[in-house]
Structure formats: structure tokens, C-alpha cells
Amino acid sequence: MDDPGPYALLGRLAVAAFVMIAPTLCFLGLVRGLERLRDDDLINEWARTRGRDGAHDLTEHDDVLAVLANEMGVEANGSSTVRCPACGASNRVGVTYCHGCQNRLESS
Image 1 (cartoon, rainbow, N blue to C red):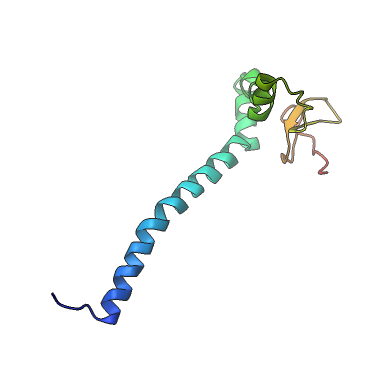
Image 2 (cartoon, one colour):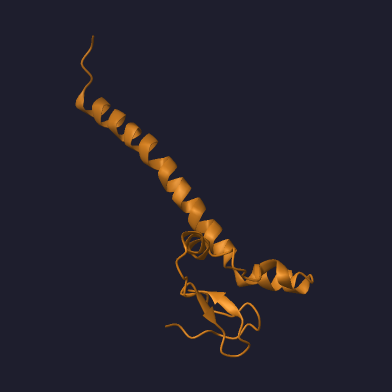
């Protein structure tokens, strides 16, 4: 069998590294993109203008940690939601504007 040269070996290693790392990076990019779409104010505003106000409201089942805490019997203190000072609607932590009144939320 022929011994590959150093450049051929380096090329094979580069291809192997790409084949192992590329799917992970694509998956992480997809997850981050879906998270941005979930929290997009444009989607919430579009749903509100279509008359589907309740479709994107937060419920007790939207917060995975709260559901798991309730199943385990642990009291969830609502730390993953923030109340709007203007209208009192609950919003996800990290969202800049209230989904109820579009008022700017104070970052803490």
C-alpha cells in the first residue's frame, strides 16, 4: 500500500474534522434561529392583528421548568417570567418589549 504524503494526510484530517463538526454547528444554528423566531415581536404583532391574541400568550404549560417543578411538587416562583409595569402581562425573561402593550421592559 502506498504511504500518503503529508499534504494528503492533512487534507484527509481536514475533511474528517469538517464531517464531524459541521452537523453540530448546523444544528446549533437552527436552534438559535428557532429561539429568535419564537421571541420575535413581529410574529407576536402579526398574530395580534390577525385576531389571535390568545395564541401567543404565556400559559403555565409554556414554561418547561415550571411544568417540571409542578410535577415534582416544587413551588416554581415564576422566575422565568417578567410582569410588564404598564399592563401587567407576563413576558419571558430576556424579551425587550411587552407582548401585550409593546411597552419597553426594564432589563434587570
